[in-house]
Length: 130
Length: 130
Length: 130
Image (cartoon, rainbow over the protein chains, first blue to last red):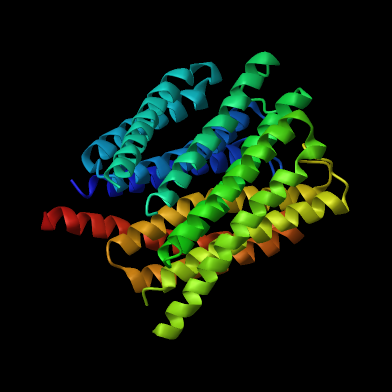
């Protein structure tokens, strides 16, 4: 049980790697020379997936830490896996078609929101307990 | 006292959420279709606020951890609240007018620099103490 | 030994600060008014260095935490220093010429991959130990 949040962290880093790899691949395939970050719709989508995943991760990992810190280790791990699943879905869907990014995005937000509720709840309880 | 840095982490994540929300709102209002990330000055400002807040957060949270790790729990929390206040000011000011982003930026940097000094001090002391 | 990962965190934040400073400097030198994020090749390179360092950091710090969490404190610190060295090399090389960013990038990836191996190994061992 204690290892579940650690597994989520490991998967989160692999997700970043995957989105970074997709950008590098598109950079080669469509010959977008660095430092350019646009030039072909498929490259633009890959780049947006990477940046949006990055933005989302910086909201996710601190929320995962909060929920775990306040003792919701198992549920934080489960919510973390939901977030991972949503973000993987989001990445694959967006790479194919920007208009299909909504479903995975929402699933990711549900996992994140659950962590934030745990974090806020844990903080509130800790305040009351003094 | 122990909960103050955790509160700062919670507020930091909410700040990210706020800047993300502002981008989504501007995306709808000015009809900037993903994956585009420019097209209207107000959207461009919202996007810059989100990215700059992200960049700043990735410098801030590790500094908050360092200062807390080396025992400056209360002062790290206070410096963290200063950073939050500065970044909220920065976000609202920049959304209205890019030239007014300086004040909040400086306040945020003061909070961040205080954390870095605590982190460096704690590291130095720990080295001497062996 | 316990302080080595903390030193790496401190250096990582200073690296972010350095890449942010380079963007601000280029913004002034080439008169790129915010919220614009392009307009001169040297500015574009500085901006890419900052964003790529950010992306890389969000993959690095969780990997550093994983390896340290599973007890590889000394080796995590060493791999962290390798990552820092690679990323500093990358930043300076890229600022001068985008085509020279490969060497530092690879060194950074080696440090990061070592941390990921430690994290995965530690996780596997913890699972087996129950």
